[in-house]
Length: 50
Image (spheres, rainbow, N blue to C red):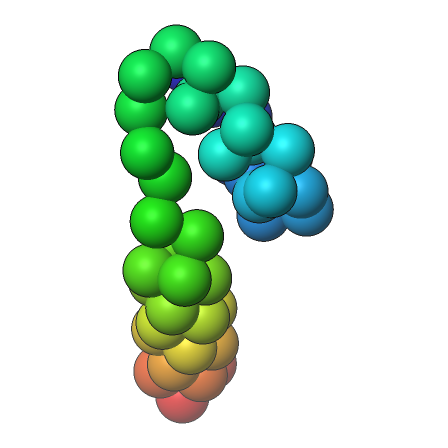
């Protein structure tokens, strides 16, 4: 299993390691999804505070 914090902090190193194992990581997509996750988490916290 991948460490999500490592994936967020150093996606290029994770991508290199995965490539050695034959897996191509789409870093741009990962970053877009991470930004979306952050926005949704902020929205959820805002709704819970109401």
